[in-house]
Length: 276
Image 1: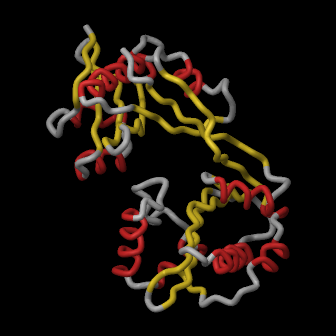
Image 2: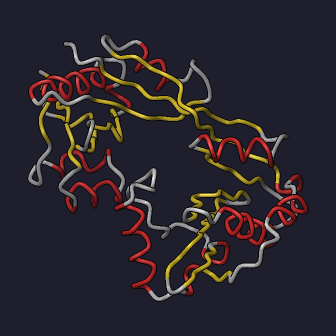
């Protein structure tokens, strides 16, 4: 027997093996994050996490225990969410990155009835550290800026900065806070006590990732100076630098500065057409 349920604080522990510690904390600590669970033969075997926001409910995670896959459980959880969203007349979407249209996530949504999948503007790419155009970056970022390590700022200033970005909807991931970044490579420039530009990099083994870059209106030259400084701190040999370019502006910058980059994945959005 199979059933789908709304996961509550009382039932969350049943599905804990399918969730990361971060998601467990977010489900218990936030009012806009919810989860649907699948139970088969009295076993918690699937979970769907979504964010209830405007203008849509966004699917953030979809997982099924390996021994229960290919039984239609993931499809059932998505349909369960759509049925309840239909009562509230709420669209359902899921944004994801995939290397191509043969990726399992792409095929899953493409084969769902009443779902359509479209390619978005962004991309995930990488370039070997040895091929970074350091001189070109330095020339573009020639404007002087009072650059300092972001994590040298007082904790209250850092917290206010992230809260400001969330209020402005300037973060693609509303839970980004910089904790997982490589602190020596996270830089910013402030003026009058307010951060004007910021760059965050994280490290995984020999590879680095440009996790987030932001500038206030009219501060693009300062952002280039910050990127140039961060680039000067990177090793010249070894791994690769990964970049998630998610807006038309960031995509055009990557195309201009890194013509030899390797595209690892494109962004897609699956959207329910509000039929059952």
